[in-house]
Each structure stands twice: as C-alpha cells, then as structure tokens.
Length: 115
Figure 1 (cartoon, rainbow, N blue to C red):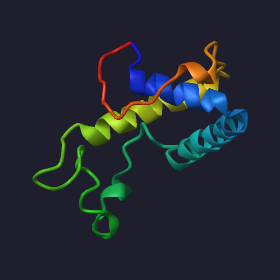
Figure 2: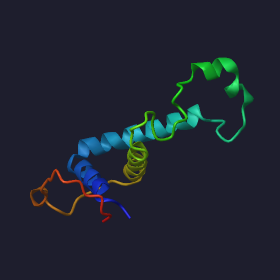
Figure 3: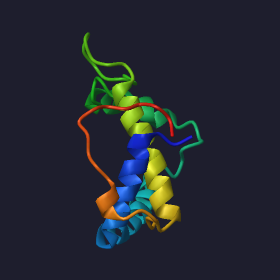
C-alpha cells in the first residue's frame, strides 16, 4: 500500500525527466558509498567501541526518533521510511504518468489515507 504523499512525489518526479535521471544517478552512487562505508556491517568489530571513537560520536546518534521532550516520535521515522521507499522505486524504475498535469490540483489539507 503506497500512501498518497508518496504517489504525489513519484508523480512530480515523473513530470521532470531531467530530475528523474539525476535521482537514478545519485541513488546508485549513494548505495555504492553505503556498501563501501559499511563493508563489515555484519561483523562484530570491537574497535568501534573504544573510548576515543565513542567520544567522537554525536550523543544523539542512537536516539531513533529524535532528541527533545516534545518531538514527534514517528515523524522522522516516517520521512526516512518514505525516502527509502522512494529511493528504491526511483533506482529500479523509470516512472511515467498517464494523467495530464492539468488534471491535478493542490491542497494544503494533509491526507494520510492509504491509496
């Protein structure tokens, strides 16, 4: 099930082929960098936990949903989840719309109903 916000993102990228091409290129390079950076991802490497390396880390790096007492606990996760899905879609597919641009209207209303 893809939510409407994601469908709109896909549709807008489809409207700009030059951006879609750039997304393809950049997603490939980002995925390549991730695989290089975490080449020992599934191994336990004790050196990662020595005092010097730990002291250089951001103190909030292991807070899954942000720091602060009043932050939304799922907002950043939802945005990250949406970016991950969109990245996967754009890296695997070239999208084209079957609906003309003139048929879409914008709204400031937020709709979280799944499509």
